[in-house]
Amino acid sequence: DGGITQSPKYLFRKEGQNVTLSCEQNLNHDAMYWYRQDPGQGLRLIYYSQIVNDFQKGDIAEGYSVSREKKESFPLTVTSAQKNPTAFYLCASSGVNFGTQYFGPGTRLTVL
Amino acid sequence: GENVEQHPSTLSVQEGDSAVIKCTYSDSASNYFPWYKQELGKRPQLIIDIRSNVGEKKDQRIAVTLNKTAKHFSLHITETQPEDSAVYFCATSNQGGKLIFGQGTELSVKP
Image (cartoon, rainbow over all chains, first blue to last red):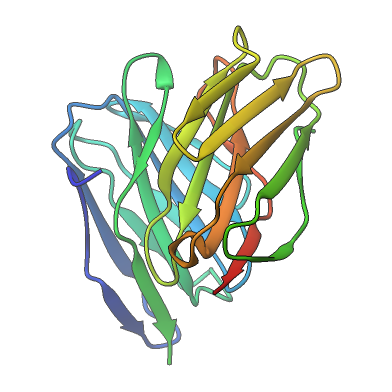
């Protein structure tokens, strides 16, 4: 999972602002995922993409948007419509037949 | 809908003892069962996984068992060490590739 990078590591947002979290992978994986993790909680799926130029909503997509213009990149935008965005955001990718998912180091977003 | 229940939510053992974490799932089409370890503030890391055509898999002190009939699978850690202390997550997926995660078990190994 060293081939997945996320930036920034920490991000602070004022209310009403949109922010974009970066996720890049050099593993040549077809599928990429975004998860949200709240303190003491499990991982909840926000969006996922199985192929370039296509993506699907996960369980908690409201207030988020994504794009998949390149195989190696899957940025997540947290919009002002997301009322409680403070959380730890994890990106993951998986290869052939959508097997094992490997995670990036995460971005911790805090709303001021 | 698809659901994975994980128990216990917290587990405290003495160093050298064994630890067992159990997950039950609802989707009978599930065919892949990974376990992840997450240390505080870090990314989840895959520690072991099993596919539905196998009943048990072992890797040194870690083993996973799968009972497809009962729809449950378990993680077994033997000879626990303080560095095993972390949050452990089970997950399931089917051909669609989405992982459904359990709520996590916080394991504490006391020296």
